[in-house]
Every structure is written in structure tokens, then in C-alpha cells.
Length: 210
Image 1 (cartoon, helix red, strand yellow):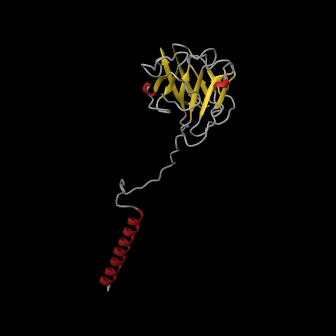
Image 2 (cartoon, rainbow, N blue to C red):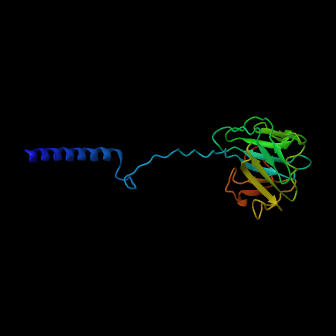
């Protein structure tokens, strides 16, 4: 009798063990790796790093006569981007972009000082007019840099030209008064000086082409 009871109890234990194994297998795939069969949940989930719109400085007329120098910004993203409160600077000064219309997807904004000839900006582009008579500290003939930043100071895009080698070294050539530096093909951004070419027919506020 005792032997029969022992065998019955043993059978129940084995059956429970097999059931437990099936249950465990249903929760963990055979590709799972454990350390001593101890599984621990993460204390917290990682947060996604913020990203910024992929706007690019697309064309620069740094030697335009008088105060007519300008910087073209292209929006290659799939949605409009409001750059009000963003920052744009050269080697010496930084400007805060005033409240302005968002740059539409596939569209252009042109940054110019309030002393410049804003009639040069086509109606299809967003006019970004700075109020301190210059763009940055007045883009220098011979060499300078242009940096576009988000309101928190994160660099969105930057370029340099001529004698300035702070970003690209060697830098793209320095444009003359009748030329601009353009990304060719339009909007190309490989973060190298090769993106930029001298354009003898500036295309302010429109697609770049040679």
C-alpha cells in the first residue's frame, strides 16, 4: 500500500513538473538567453533622443553690393518648419530670427538685413528680415562662416568659405559680388566642401542649378 501511494505521489510530481515546463516554455522562446534562469525587467525605458528638422543653408551671397547680402535656407523635409526664434550667425555676431512665416515643405526662406533690398526675394520664398542692419556681423568678403541653430543653440547646419577653415578645410571658394555659393545639386548635404560650388547666376529663393 505504501509503495502504491509513493508511486502515485511521484506521478503527480512528475506531471506537475512537465506542466510547469510547458508553461515556462510558452513565456520564453528558445532564443532567449538567461543567466542562472533569472530574468529581470528594466528599471526604466530609454527615452528617444530629440531630433531637429533637416533644414540646410542652401545658398549664400556673401559679397553682394551694399547690404544686399543674403542667405537662403531650404526645407527638404516633409512638413513646414517655423524658424522664428532660431539663430543665425557668422564669425563675429549672432542674430535671433524674428517671428516669420514657416518655411513650407520643399520651400525656401531668405535671410536678409532690414537695410537690404528685400524686393530681390521672390514672393514664393519666405522673407526673413533681420532688424540690425547686417546678417551676423556682416558676412566678410574673403572668408567667413554661416551657422544656423535651433532656439536651444543646437547647430542645425553650417558652412564656411574662402579663408575661413573652421568647418571645411580646405573651404569652398569665396564668391564675388555677382556670384553666390550654392549647394549643387540643390539641397545636397554630405557635410563636405564638395557640396558647394560657385554660381555665377544666383538663384535667390529658388532651386539651385548651374
